[in-house]
View 1 (spheres, rainbow, N blue to C red):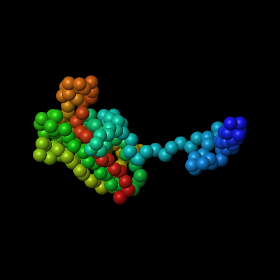
View 2 (view 1 turned 30 degrees about the vertical axis):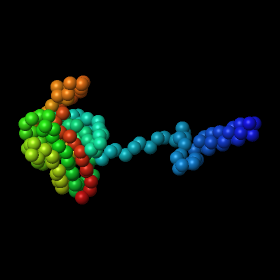
View 3 (view 1 turned 180 degrees about the vertical axis):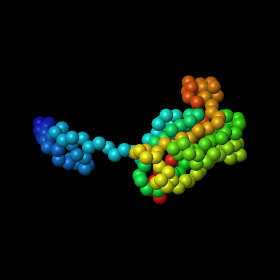
View 4 (view 1 turned 45 degrees about the horizontal axis):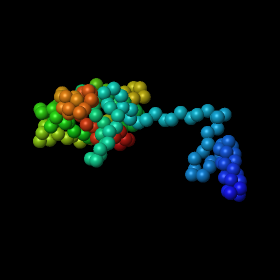
Length: 175
């Protein structure tokens, strides 16, 4: 028992010394050295903003709900970019066609009417560097003409968000 305790104490002391020295420990992780400044993370290529809800997951995959209008900030890379957008409208809950509009920096890229027969969209756009905003980010908006409120459709729901479009794919990559 004493040997086991001594071994554990030595193991703890060794790991404590490794962590304090700032050297890499097992598993390739490095300990935090409080005397060095933190390096800020690079800005994300895609930043979800107003009207875009947190990622949700289910057996069929993952998605983000878009309110009546959602805004997404896309990092300008000063090069031609490929934008891919895919998703669907919950036509079975809205019970009427919905017009989905996609704009970049206020300029309409596309407008599609989704129906019971075709409630999905998958679009690709080439965005020249000249069409990106002057600042660090361009602004992508997705808006829909129809929405639903889950708590008005499902009796056990307390979700009072206005939801219009299920965004299943968004890519912003150099062309």
